[in-house]
Length: 600
Image (tube, rainbow, N blue to C red):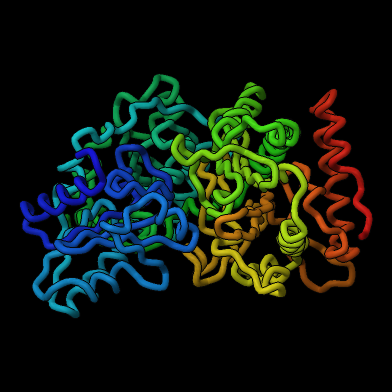
């Protein structure tokens, strides 16, 4: 099957063999992960789409791929319009589209290990309303026609030391056991890979750029636990670290273990667990309690050790990125560099720290028109030369034992236009407004989102992605549950109250299709704010990322005195933190970029 058209035809043939009139192909795995291993990249294999979020539906005579506003341009570049309809979400849901396109008595297949119970309920009701049926499959039809589907990773587990974690695994399991007691539950099933990595203080290498291991876990009310992971992943060091209170089983035994909950009350997070898990527990006579994974909030609220670790990682990472920014400012205008070569050079600077574990995601290295694709993924085929007159956008991050980073900067290759400077400065104004926000406890991210957009709205502009996402502690660069976004955006609602210790990104942007893209991204730590004369303890943000903001793209006349003071104070912090790490020409360049900017 040499072409995507051939693959689509083969899938239709397979659906006929399985007596199905359609099938839903999500971009996820058995753990509802955002980033998935190569074996689970079914959507990319079938369609060619390389984005990090999407779903496909294949019917006998038509097929559709569902993407959000981040991928409107990208999907048209990577997926054939002759074979696929492009459908925007959340404007149109997969279930709603299905209901409007299937025939009566149609049997639409789905893999119960790749969808949540909520999605199954929604799709079942939508199809039932038009006389069709949602059918669970035992064999995923995409897997049946994928001849060279990669095997699951066999990377070893590794211990995440308590000096980085800040709390021992025993302490974390004890807290989960206390929670189970409060819920009058016998056990909780943990299916999210980040939750398992966090509660056991282990890390893995099974998902590109995210240090997790393919596994499941059951934590019991007595504080003991059962970890289900492929035997070849275990090491003696990990076994000693886990101790006798953690029983280790083959990952393949997990489904069978769910049959042992007869008469038990078992907590399962409906948002982070696939439908197959509660179905198996209920089939065995257990009672499923639909409750949030008890590790989600403790994982999102970084303890003091994790906060200190992230600050150290931010300084180290900021120095590496600053070295790169100086390099691209010199080499970019000369010609000869490409999006791929620039991304490779930045990775080399990070690796020269000597402690980089991995990148936190594939760098979005985008020049000119590719910069207008918010989640652009550079490939050999798409990589453009970096040329004068363009804006070069680099969104990247690193995975370190003490923290996960994510930062975006934009570099003008040559002299920027007046329009570029106007748009960049408006994005900066929104960035500053969010960075300096003060708000009461209970505030959710969607209430703050307008702060980052208002300067753009005032010029009739906007951006089609969220403003901020949570970030893990040597875990996923995209971590829930907190986020800053319009409620209507994917992941935008319902929002989570922001709590001290949470780390979120601040990344407003502007994208001119076919021309350039702008995004300024720093990471923020939520912390308490005590205001003189105030009656309540408020919350605010401390900016963690330490990298110069491009002064040549700023129009000072658009900044208020307050905004200018913030920018200059930020650059004082950057220069002080990185000045002791950088030397020679890099340090001189840093000092020049961080010099005070005067009002225009």
